[in-house]
Image 1 (spheres, one colour):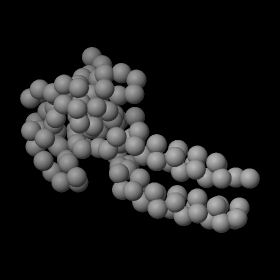
Image 2 (cartoon, rainbow, N blue to C red):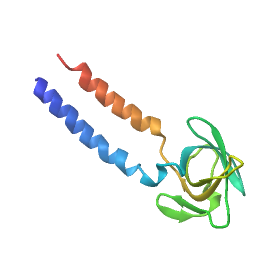
Image 3 (cartoon, rainbow, N blue to C red):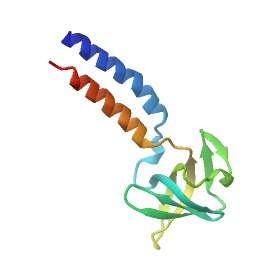
Image 4 (cartoon, helix red, strand yellow):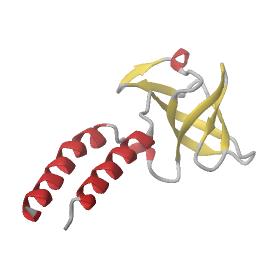
Length: 126
């Protein structure tokens, strides 16, 4: 029975993994990237609430926008949506966006699914 539960937990992890990987974008990791919720938006930029801070992000004429891996324009920027910004931090503390990736999934849902699977597997140990 114990072996069956281990195999079931592993199978569940494999089923959940592709969904998590498809939502993952490697460009959003590293010192030149931010992710968070858009809390304000103007024609010239946005305010992004990250895990630790709210950051002002400026757009330039060269800033590109993407949603579902397709090029879009800045009219797709919506307050309340999650976004990723790739760019550089300015001396003023603001960010200049080279690229804005819109429509990111909420990280909490993916984390909760993983935790639920781990709890379920741990709860069946004897």
